Image 1 (cartoon, helix red, strand yellow):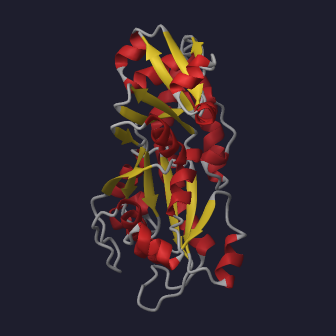
Image 2 (tube, helix red, strand yellow):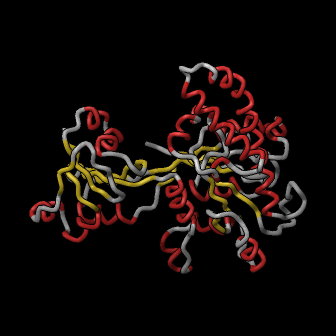
Image 3 (cartoon, rainbow, N blue to C red):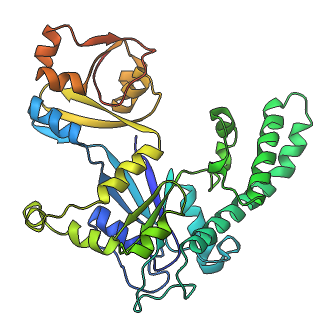
Length: 350
């Protein structure tokens, strides 16, 4: 089960620099608007110290991490929802991702032109958010008339409920609040899922900062889920080997972003150990049951599920091997209703 994160923002804020630092892929990071037209897509390993520890214990022939996909989407500009700057094309790419990293520039640089000619992080956030909200309002308006007609039919109870939700969303958007800032429950989200609205997606604000006192003070006033990173430095560090990093006594901070993406998507990691051949990490949504997680590994593990043998990573680490934990009776047999926990190591029985 793979999840994707879209990298968005105004032109020339560091989106492609971030993408290159994350993926080590060669991309155009020239300082001119729309140097990225078609989105760049890269697969990134999710940092996981637990997987490394399990591999040290099991000593498999192969260790496979879980991954997350990053999509570098071209810069948005004012009027994007009306098609300005190829806006409709870029907005359609955002529909396809599960979460958003919104890159905002806060550093001065004479050689890097800012689309608005001045630096103002909150203004830049508002420009992009406005375009996303306007596109969502447009989507809702198109759907409204059809839904209103359906809701008049007493048998169309779901349509009536959906109309009520959309009315709430419309009010929120008109008040310049993102849908993600509303308290929609899971059923409400499921009813409007087919609309693929943009501002319902979880957002991380990444401030491309050089770390000056002025910039750090500014960041305090920005929304939750805000991460400051010097993307130029992160790119340089991503190109160094472990020995060089150790010599410089510097560690990349890009892992913080990857882990935060994982967190805002409500994801957990579980592990499988295949007879000493492969230790592998897998991604699942919080609240997934053992059969559902089995289906992520192989469809037969969900369709023909009998039970799961489960031990948490911490217990395995404490006892040093699957054999020792089994001898102590610490490997549990769990049924179809078991909700898998982050860090569980599972052997599926069919």
